[in-house]
Length: 195
Length: 426
Image: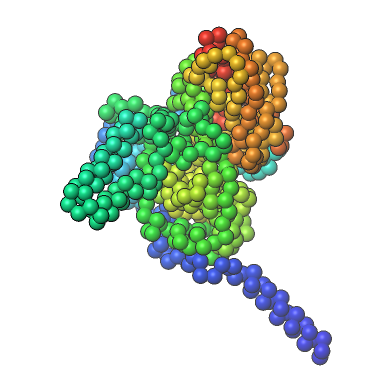
């Protein structure tokens, strides 16, 4: 009897300690955001498609949007112009990486198609970011990838297909995954330079 | 502002105040004089430096629209290290690299900071709320990973024989940062099991986003609102900036609006496409964060002239992303012999440290260099050593068009017989 009472007190104490650990330490500072507050800024898209919204688009659908909103800086065929850099690229650009004058373009350098979607969505068109719909962003991404012959004119880009697009320079980065360098000291960095 | 403009502003302001005084005197002396007093005081409410001091940042925000108008486009604005004393960079002279975007004009009363993702309790804070939390103030440098790179958009100025310390090393600055430890905020939110990364995001026009391993976030990262005793300057992230001590500048997200706790790096544009280092094997290195040990003599340095033979104090800055500076050696003979320099307090972890060494110039040619060692025992490398570590030769470092990230080679300055000082890196 006495023992079980003690046990009960003990359990209660443990429970309250667990509850304490769950409770924030600084009361009244910060609050829980509303769903809308999170949605308004929750724009990041990861390499496996996390965060990509519903919507879809093809290069064909992207062509008129690119002509209207992007060509003025990036050129009619995403070949680059005075303001905006060239976006197209392929093997020639990958080969250039071994020279004194490496060329980095979306098609010829970027390792993930999701980064293209993410960057257009968060930053483009310059001075007017945030005005494109998700489907327009998919279509523009498809257009840029098609201009580099990475996807076809009619390939539908959406949250499922985009992460599967194989970018030509995907294997041009070392180490392939961060997991391979979790221990910075094992990475073999010497005097501030990493191999 | 040029000194002349500054002169003129001063003159106009005091002139107007004096005119007010004169008018007042003719009508009703005392009340009018009292009315005009605030005009004079206005000048002192937020102090300006002497108009005789001309030191300014050089370069421009890399705004691509400038190219349309054929205006010069630089990589960013460099800090005039050669004019600075001590180890703090004046806030008004802190270097600026912002990927081509002007600082946004953020009302701190409207600004919100959100933590969400893989946490038990998503949290949103006002600026006032953040200031109620336990704070820390720490000296830390912030350095662009392209600082002092011989290649890349800033390369030509950096390599020029006429380069100043500003041209060669101006993309680093050191401040006293005040704010809340990110670890405290993440603890409040309750990081879920399996979380391994955060993405930090700014409120600038490009919504700059950077993935950072959770280990750094829980270690010494600061969500900072203060810089050198006052609110962070707009160019540096007002009202809120993530400070990741010792890590490449790109991680120190300005105008911080959001941190999302996630389970993988999100591979945003800058971290996959602009900032990896391309090496001659055609492979790009990414997930590089910590900056190696680096130092530079700021006086005497490039572009300066020693007027006469005799005593000069050699003075410079040393820093390392790995910790505190333990030792700085100075050579006056091109690296044949080295002598320990004196380190000046405060000597803080991941902060600029001021060093000095006495020198009597005998009027002969001399090559001045500094070499630092951090508290991990890592020694600043020579150019040849950096080349070797890059799997290249010195000619590659000299001629490549791409940024040589984290370039931390020893910087030599050649003092000529006429007292002129030149960049002697290559």
